[in-house]
Image (tube, rainbow, N blue to C red; front, side):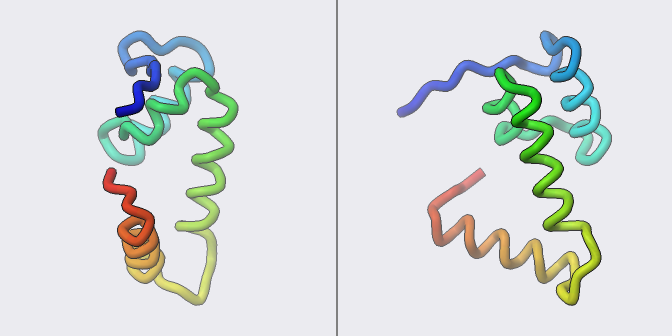
Length: 81
């Protein structure tokens, strides 16, 4: 099993703390997929910006359809998080 150093929300400072606060504002928690990016807050921000643009920008697909596609792709890739 791989081990990745993470910074927990209570220990976050600066840009990382801001990103965790944004995450908490969206979901009332900080998901592990964000924590594994905690050593590089600028990458975490870019990742979240891409996710938000993909999932929330105007599209012919509904939000539910996009979530379903993301779930199926994650399942097919055996990403269970």
